[in-house]
Image (tube, rainbow, N blue to C red; front, side, top):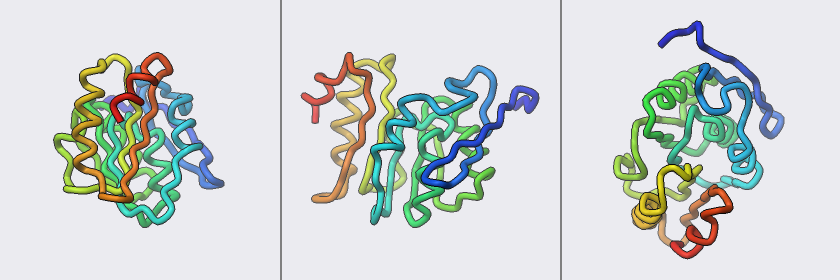
Length: 165
C-alpha cells in the first residue's frame, strides 16, 4: 500500500496512548469518530476473556480496548480489505499480542465457537436484513449466561435493533 497516503495520530484511552496509522480516504482518518468514542466510553471488559468485533474499521475502538485489556483476546473483522490491512498495521504499531484480524461480513468466519462479548459498530448502509441476520448469528456465538452484545447504531434504526434482540 502507498505509504505516502499514511496519516498518523495518537489517541489517549484510559491514560494509555494509542498510536494509529490510517490513510487518506479512510473514514475518520485523522481522529476517532463519535461512534468509536461512544463505544470506548460505554464498553467494560473487566474479566472478559474473548471479544469478537464486527465492522472494526482500522481498529479505531478495537485497538484501544486491546491495549487496555491485555488479558482479553480480540477477533477484529471488517468487510473491507483496506481496513483489515490498517488494523494489522495498528496491531503491530501498538505491539499487541492479543489480537487477530480477518475479512468477514458479520460473524460467519468467526474463529471461535463462543465469545463472551460481541461488538458491532453498525453501518446503516448494510440494511436491516443484514443487521437481523447478524443478531441471529451472534446469539449462537455468545457464551451462555454471561455473553454480551454491544451494538452501536444510528438512532434511525434504534427501535428496529431493539426489536431484534
